[in-house]
Image (tube, rainbow, N blue to C red):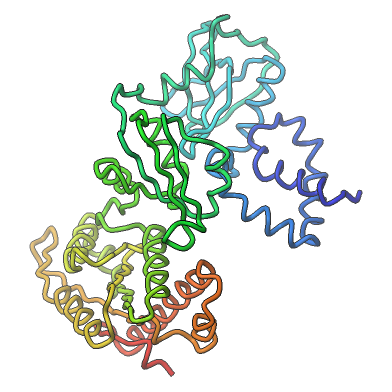
Length: 428
């Protein structure tokens, strides 16, 4: 069967977003259409590109998308909801299976959840789908909730902290420009809201929302979190600090990899506006860290990560990029100074006296790759920057290039024997 482009796109979006909420019998009926649409959309690259871009038009990607492990369970729950039947659930931490009456299926903060009641009781509870070990449909009619039961009101009570009576006099949130349509169409509840468009805002690729007398509370925080790294609170400072905690790596208190990427792009945009500015970037990787972990335990490994984080200057943007790899952004720094800083970090790590549980000193060293913007950019990208077109796209390309150059320099440091600093400028 051949679908029109519009039909293809609708089936594609339903397959991507709605699978966890479709009854299993409907999934069976629609499966062939979904597969056909996924094949056909490949011949419409503009539609596929649009689909990928609109993932961020709201935080529906976080609200509706699901991992494959939960889809079968969600489909059975959805089928039970459709037919008002009970299900039998085997739940983590419960010795025996129990009968459950589903009232609603929802997703909140990346987790699918079902609301319902046990056995012949109508009092509602919330279960996490990730803790459901197995589920079977039954032919037994489900007990219905009380007539005055309101699913949304129940969720607000169970999953949100109550609204504070306090209001934020002035809230400022900086959004990525691809959020502009959504934020414009979904006004924040406040006495006054003003949006400075991407064309008017002084940071390319972003826009600013200003709101006055905004009700404070956990719901506001959940709304902001839904946009992930696409939103950054600027004011008030207390709220900014609370929200930034979510952007920090829990082991080292450094930035996450996603937040570091945002900072890197902003620094590039700053340099694109002022051609006199430059910065350096370091990628640091601990040598033989797996061996350190295996021989001394993960608790000791966590101590090592914290000690390494302490070797980085507080005013430099630094992130734990994953495992034992760190990234450091050195604003307004040229090559000679960057080399000095990189070697200082390397020496401080090497000189750490880290003792394991047996009071034995465990040597720890690091290899570092260093790249400088704009010096280490390839010629074609430098030419594009000189033309000065599409700053947002240029910052994306430049960020990927700088990271790649520093990563290649890191690889060279590993190849040359580790515990050293290598420069992207020296790569052949």
